[in-house]
Image (tube, rainbow, N blue to C red):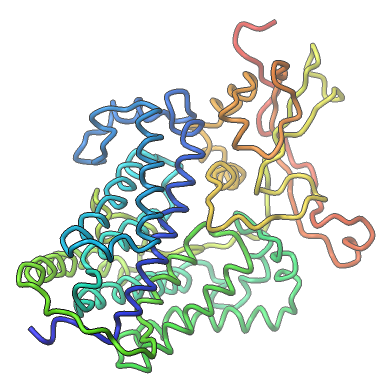
Length: 470
């Protein structure tokens, strides 16, 4: 079938596949370096405890059959290796069926991690990576030209990401409709970046322009993805520019990067396509069958998008094949942070020698400037932002986190930037206090050198020690 392939998009496929493999690599590296403290046998929310109460059909995963920290580490590092191989182009050296199987490996491994990842893997970009990765399995390699229906599925996914995000904003916080959300967002977002302070201090009229441009990009431009070239290419380029602006303004893990990767699949690069053989019949049958399945399953995110009760970042099946997306339907006006402290004093006095634990990404010391971590995902730091919004978000894990700090647990301390207590000398008490944070003004920055100003609000967790200690 001549209509089945689009040879002019061979370079778009190549760029998309290599970029997607890099995102996979970051995701697996994040898992490999953080899982032991978060999900391991002595983690904050252990996988063995989770799989005891959640059946395979609700959370299909390799770890439903067997779990050990060594096995999890092996899967995570294997995912890193396969992702690196795909980024280097190993799939182009294999026969078509072999390339498809190779692309299936990181999808299956990451699905196994996400489905036991609990609250640490509850972010929309986990499902977005899985849905994108599944579609990529059927994109083919150098043996055939890119299939038209798979390119359409990628555009359909990009449309749902952008349009869904636009709708959730218009239906959510009124500040999006009043064009005032960016008066607060850069200051209250989960993980500020090194430039977020400067974005916050842009003139307010420019903030209005930013919000209006965002609405255009998310509510109007997505429809142009289905127009012929060059209109579709221009639409994708505008989306890429918008996402790069977001990359500069904050740390949103790989959400912006995976959206850019999807947009790259739409770009028709000026190049002469190489000569390739016609797609084999079995490949056409498989691709069309999978496309039909995904289009059928899409009725659920479509119903969600048109619903007045639209929800964001929801998976409709345990394989994360078709999902709904969106972020920041509500924007916080005030930033709160949980500051965790420990003391080696015999008694937990208010005026005692309390020393602050420093996190890698979340605000702490007002003089410490935020760093750029995205696309790497600091999972504990993100959850600490939710914990500051409400203690209920931290209920399943915060108590265990404090217990691990009291033990000076090495795996847990690796998640932090710095512990104020040396190995072998754990704190006797740990407490948590809630502070209100705001960006300093230009004048305050010049006078104090601090990018944050913080004010004590209340006690978050009273001084706590290990059970049985005196």
